[in-house]
Length: 322
Image (cartoon, rainbow, N blue to C red; front, side, top):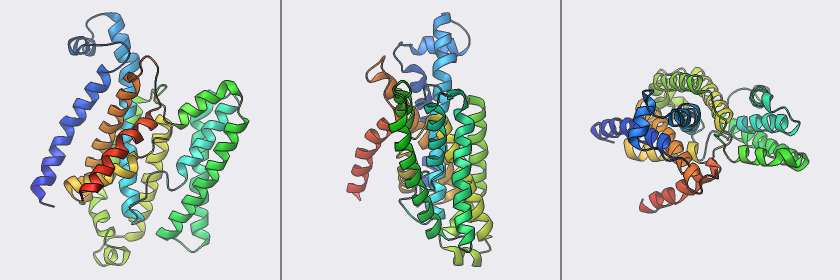
């Protein structure tokens, strides 16, 4: 891939992401013109417009961007780490553990405790994944992948059991969260900080990830500390997945396809691929969320459904071309 094209794509993604953010701020059941939006951003104009922007739309748009960025970055890491094009952020079972914790708290009426419950579930899944691989003699990409699939399947069964046993009053909220829900996301500053740290770590690991993509043996011969790189990558991917699940529930498709699209557009150099995938993933989820708020407004659609409905035909078209 020519370096000039890589820089062109990288330079184009930032303004495109900014445009997506403005579209996300403008979209909704209450129309806001660009002039009203600009006034509200600087604290002028009607109080209603300012409340809509600062209390409702801005936190949600920030959460949508951060959720998409974390998922796309985690997918990029796992695809090179496991050397499997089908790897995505949910393949380790971490999101399944977080989902079990969250839905369990919602089912027993402890909605205020969903964040610690999700963290506990994700930590249990990570601990189980680490314990199985340690007992089997250490790191193996195939073993990590299979263990993650087994844990995710088990968590899926527990999620189905929770849905079957949940009281009817809590069932709709549980299903909506499971399909992707950004309605109650409010951790804007913390989420942005997490995305910044995650992106910086990904870029710093870029050269080592490039070597790791050639295989562990070649990476070692090139001077990469394979064990540390693998451990750091899987820890970053797991933490990013947990953060995304806490922000928006389970949003499928983003972490699987966005890295592939960006590899095709801008190449496989992970020093560029990580920020490119995060920007594209964040913008994609923001636009999907904007559509979810406007297609049948004032009723909301699950964001995860739209990410799949938008992404699947585009990806099939992209694959059919080449």
